[in-house]
Image (cartoon, rainbow, N blue to C red):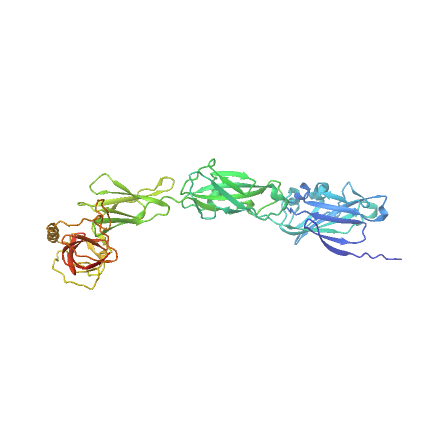
Length: 525
């Protein structure tokens, strides 16, 4: 008696489409080659509902069947760690698959429907028969498909007539799109004509072929102050929703107008209209929130300082997004406001002769937007004096009019005990100044001769139109001061009271106090 030994050789074949097909080569008369095309779906029903997913090719290769036809049927086995779906051992289809020698026969999903009916299968592990009946989702991971052909002839015991063909597929949930514009927390520039290009990046899907059948749903929500964007998209209706088959959407003038300064939330959902792909988070992207322009906010922290030329300097915290500021001021006893435009966070105004000012400021923003007025700021009892003068000790009182001693250590000027070292630190109020001393200094100025030279600009803070060209000193220039002449040093006005070619004496004028100031014979402009 002769024994026939069948030798099996396992080959790992990479198909032209990139799938891994493991074939067990032998001397069986039929070869069986399954293919799982790379659009691996999580849906069990996709095996037979699409002819672009599963294919099985059978070839009768034994020459002894040259003139005949051999009827066969198939048995399938899907296997993953802990899960198995296989053909029932007792299932034999009613109609066989007829093979002829040398002619390959390729079976598609629609040809194999009966094999994948729930009643003809056994499910074990993480899958159950209800999933098979309902065409539910396969657990994700690596699955191995084994297909074997058997003789249809029951009298011969349905003998195995082919090697077992093996194919593998990686089943996974696709990833939802990733929004690329706008970025999370971004402040978009407001536009006169609304024109925003929302865009996103499609990410890995379980199906190569399913990419062409994707649609995207774009949803836009308005987010109020204190609301969490992720909670808003779960509990509110979107202010805008549309679908597109591209990876961007141009949000234009026909779409709901966005309000400048408001916050919005955007999300995008991907869906496969052919039902091949399933996605994590049901296809929804992460929620991205953004601001459409910046709100036009009111200025804060108004404060008032005084210069040495009887000018008030109003300042406030600059506001992001403000292009200019509108300043309104009036006497506390008046009812009509005077307005002016400021381009930075400061504004200067001449002090009133009598009474006190009160101020308010608002921001002017893009697209003709204005903020609310700030709170009204009233002039305080005392105002900080600001100056760029430095170099002497604070004056004890403006009523001290004793003659100072000359100090000639400076090229520009020398100071007296009545000249403050840093007027920025002085608080000027009626309690510090003697009315009699003020009247005395004013009388001294009135008795001076009319200056022989006029100058444009009475202080560092203002200019006055005139036809006389001011004298400009450059470098170090020798001069002989004349009594009553006005000269300007470091932005301050000095009236000369006496002097010669080597030295002079004058009056330095600053708010509510006139002090004697000595001059050197050479002045640096």
